[in-house]
Length: 118
Image (tube, rainbow, N blue to C red; front, side, top):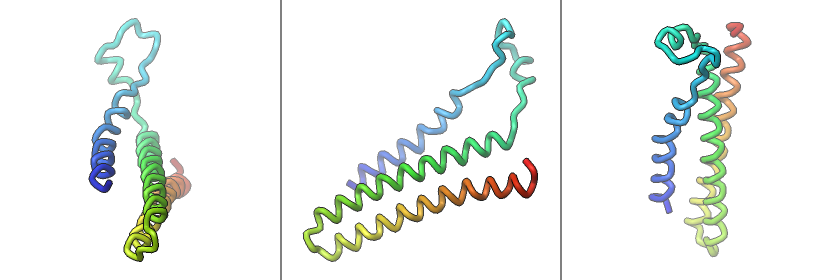
């Protein structure tokens, strides 16, 4: 089960950046795409950071849900085995840490915007 989760996590981490790179907003009335059109498109660093933190926090929340489901499975199949119960408790702790990190990343970005006026 751990190897399957590891493979799913690595595959997801490898594929997610391609989804972000595939989205391009181009002007609609250009009559065609030229190098000059692409050079005139402004890139806002704040929007890029916001997009990255949104992806990371969403990914961490998804991983936390998987950890909780796996921990519930371990609890249900433990049959009183103290080692399995301890392992399930650790997975729930990891899920809570993932949620805290996800919320902290969003909070730090909001704090940076408030302080620096982005």
